Image (tube, rainbow, N blue to C red):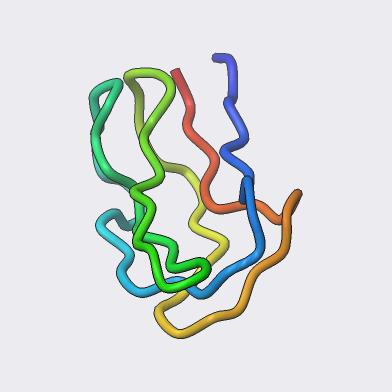
Length: 73
């Protein structure tokens, strides 16, 4: 099966994580919420699939390129 790596688009802090390993998700589902410059940005799933890895936690400060999640589809 193919894997899609969802990466952090901008520097910020993770304020919520809405998925865990094993969850089945649909394209457009919110994986997590990232706060940057006092704005909350939902990070959406680009494909339907199953979460095989979650690379972030609440209150974690992240930089562009870090892995949020890996989706197998």
